[in-house]
Length: 358
Ligand code: KG4
Ligand code: ZN
Image (cartoon, rainbow, N blue to C red; front, side):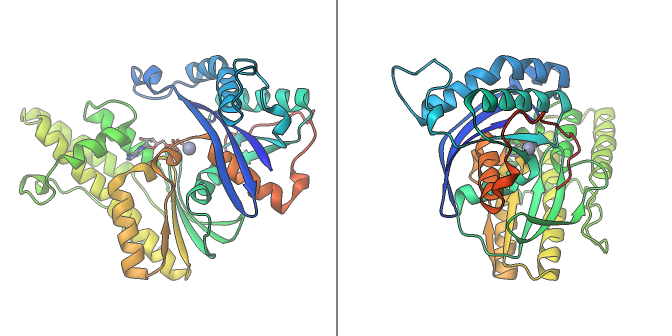
C-alpha cells in the first residue's frame, strides 16, 4: 500500500510517500523543509513563527513529495499528481507544538477529504521508533527503544509491534534540549546538538586538555531507568561563569567543554540503556530521535550493545533520525496493517494532542 505521510510537529515541514508491503516499508520520496535558519536568530523554536512557516511550506512540500514519487512532466507543479496511487493519508497529531501540529493535521484532513482517502493519525514518538524499520527491516522482539529528541528522553520496552511500555524517562530536560541549552550557554548556534558534536569531534579525547573539566553524570547509578539533565546544564553554567571571570573561555576551552558535556550525556544514556536491556532480556536495542544523529552516541551505544550484551543494535540512517515524514509513514503502515479500522474516512474533525504519550 502507498501512504502519503505528513509531519509538522515542530520546525520541520515534511511530506513523504512510502510503500509498505509484506512487513517492509520503502521510501518513494521524503521531502523536508527545515526552518532552522529562521529560528536560529532567536536561539530556539518560536511556536508562532513555526506555524506561519508551516502554512507557507506545507502545500509545496506535499506537491514535491508526490511529484518525486510519481514523476510526470505534465503533472509537476499541479498539486495532486500521483494522488490516484495513494491508499492512505497519515499525519502526526502529537506530541509537539500545538500550533505546528494543527497545520499538518488540518491540511491532511482537507486533502484526504477532497481526494477521498482514509486518514490515519500518528504519534510522533512512534514515528521516530519506526524510522528503524525503514533501515533494517527485521527487528527481533522484545526490543528496547532509547528515544532521544528535543522534547523527549525515554526508554520504551516493545514486546511486539505497537506494544509499548515506558520504563524510564527524563525527570526534567530532554537530552536534545540539554544539547540546545548548553550550546546557548557556550555562545554556539541553534540547534545545539550538531554544533556541539562537531566541536567535540575536533577535540583529541586523550589529550590532557580534554580532561580538564569533570562534569557530573546525573542519576547514572540510580536504582531506576530515569534520567535528569538539568543539573548537568547548571554545572556547565557555573563552569562557564567561572572561566569567563578568569577570561579563559576561548575556542579550545569551549570545544573541551563540548566534548566533556557530550561524553557525560552519552555515559548516562549508555549505562541506563544497557542496564534496562539486561534487566528486561531484550533481543534488540533501537536508538531513535534527533539525538540519535550523534555519531559518538551511535558508536558508543552500538559497541556496548553488541559487545557487552551480544544482541542486535539498530539506528536509522542519519537523515531519518531527525524529524521527517517517512518515519510517520512507516509507523502508519504498521498501525494500518494491525488494525485497518484505525484509519477513518474524512470528515473526522481531526484532533491534535500536544502531550500525547505513547
Ligand atoms: O527529533 P528531533 O528532530 O525533533 C524533536 O522531536 O524534538 O530532535 C531535535 C533535537 C535537537 O535538540 C537537536 O539539538 C538534537 O536533536 N540533535 C542532536 C544532533 N542532531 C540533532 N543532538 C546531538 N547530536 C547531534 N548530532
Ligand atoms: Zn522529533
